[in-house]
Length: 314
Ligand code: SF4
Image (cartoon, rainbow, N blue to C red; front, side, top):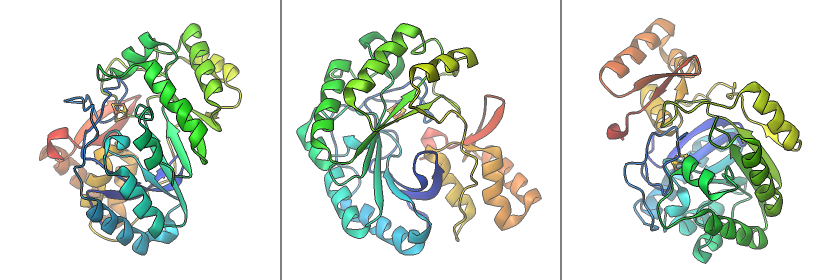
């Protein structure tokens, strides 16, 4: 199934086979994180907006469930920016809840929970996974480059209110970038924030796909050892997922482009998707053509080749 609202199921390190839902077009975000795999945010978005029609999104969610329900572990709201900026998120999520009795998750930068309407909108989720990667204002600004109206105190206040009101689980994601938030004082501040929040789980990740800023690197191995000493309860998400992308019927190139829009594909993953339909030699040729005609962009990061969709093509 090809949809601009729904993609996958794709393998997720947290959510197994995850059917992604994009409640907003690329790249609607109030941050411009240095590690963002979607590139820099062209224009920071502060206000919540309705862009995608709720009923169209729900129609595609329903079709995806009918076609692929058996191969979905989680329906995950995430996508091409910050999902809580969608003013109609609550309608979409409660509509999805009526269609799907399985697990639902939200991947968010965690910046909008100071708003009561956002905390209400997210109640149907089973899991909310916010980024908690800074414990002091300076690090917060360097890492996320947020819109002016946001600051760390406001974000943390919102997360604490969410913790009090939300019945599901909160899985904090800590993204570490060398020289930005991996010093000992910075890590101790983050630990304090995560402990205060009472997160049910902590996931530690590092950039594994081409980031917005080319200087962004994961912490050194020595630092990572220190990180896991400080967060013994944390789940290690620093290795890229290895499960191959699930194969759907339908047009492989279009499917690959939909997934690569917000999930840069390693070369082996892209080859896996295409060669199933057309054999390895043709898949190789097809990838080369898609790069040449500008539908895909090839990038190297961490010694691996990735394919992403250039921003202007979405
Ligand atoms: S990583 Fe997420 S929060 Fe940060 S700029 Fe990208 S989409 Fe926005």
